[in-house]
Length: 165
Image (tube, rainbow, N blue to C red; front, top):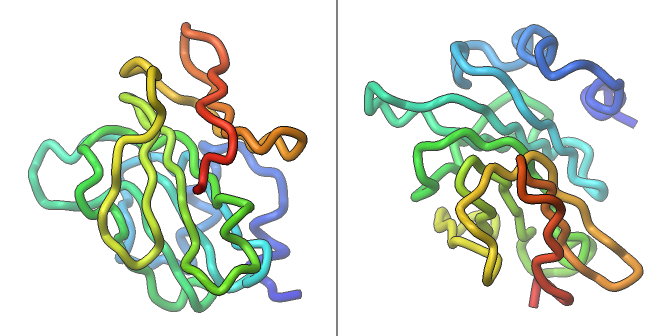
């Protein structure tokens, strides 16, 4: 088990995550916004995703979602066309883990859920019927293969069954 995987699995409050990651990130990632989620690929412990809150009001394209495939040596902004809103939650689609296809990533934002395939650079709004609401957490229900989105003030939404297909 690599050190970054061991470190990331340690339960830490989100407000400490920025300091926790700072040593490995350098100046590549955002330093002015809070880290809201850290997700490690269950089959590749060097592959880590980090989500940031905040807005890019300066238009500098600082991004909200970053990925490293090498344990933090280098980071890539995978925000692509994601709207400039806080990203509060990330989830790797469990159905895309262990397959030969690229990973499917879901992002819970302040205006709903978005979906991308790693490497595509294109995010699509996801969740038919889900209102534009703050999504604070994303969960996967293995029993019925549903993506669940916990929202601020609108309850928990079961977006769809077999959501990755």
